[in-house]
View 1 (cartoon, rainbow, N blue to C red):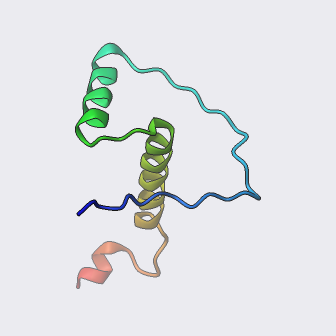
View 2: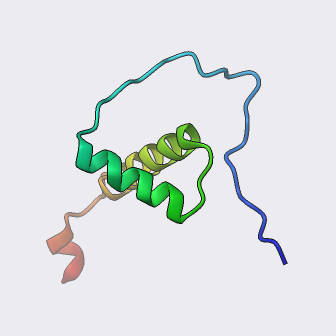
Length: 75
């Protein structure tokens, strides 16, 4: 049975108009190419976007301000 792929939802009212460019060295590029081939990822742009944004959202969630600091909550 073929597994369905989960993609981010397209937002026709929110077109992507901001371009971001970055450089990789040879080793980094080889690692990315190997990963994409291993997991059969065809759309590199979507993968970069989802990977970067998921990391950002995870970090923001972890850094969310709380009423008490970590030491006070462990008591």
